[in-house]
Length: 221
Image (cartoon, rainbow, N blue to C red; front, side, top):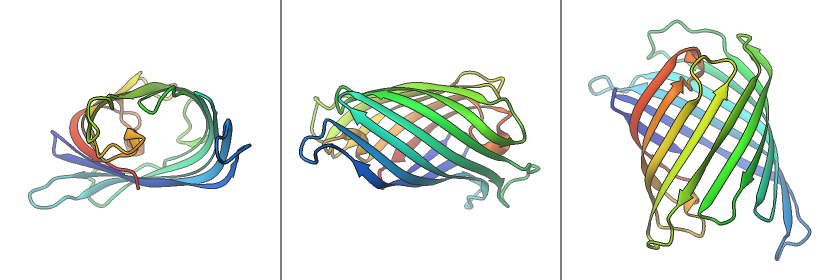
């Protein structure tokens, strides 16, 4: 769950969660490996500030299934997702029909709660409008949790390269503080500065470029 405010008076909001339906491991006390199967859903919303109002411009929705597991410091994930994107009544643009069905595979390396790196490949199974199919993603995060128990600095970055876009790679960067420091700092309440440049992540504008500087808050639900 996240809320960000950009310098161009634009606000973005994300609300979502995942639910593990089935979990398998050799031991509940100290499992050497674990596999989960579950479902996920999310909504991504774009608004703009207009005097005392915040008209809703875009609404993108995601539903999907995932199978993921870990053993030692290694993690793996397979996902099938459906995404649809819509213009709301606060937008002056002309809407297009937009949907994506994607199969993705990712591997992660997490030697501690403080550091996480990942690499993934994406394949479009169906898309409208029709676009080239392949995409790559890589990135990571680091939490400096040894400094204090209540305030944890962190940095995170993500790169995406998509065949469908001429604006490659897309770069996302976050620098901020995690509060209250539970055993996994990345699960705590966070506020941050974010920089993004590359292909517009809003589905209705996928063929455009977008650059933003914003400040945001994020929390687990």
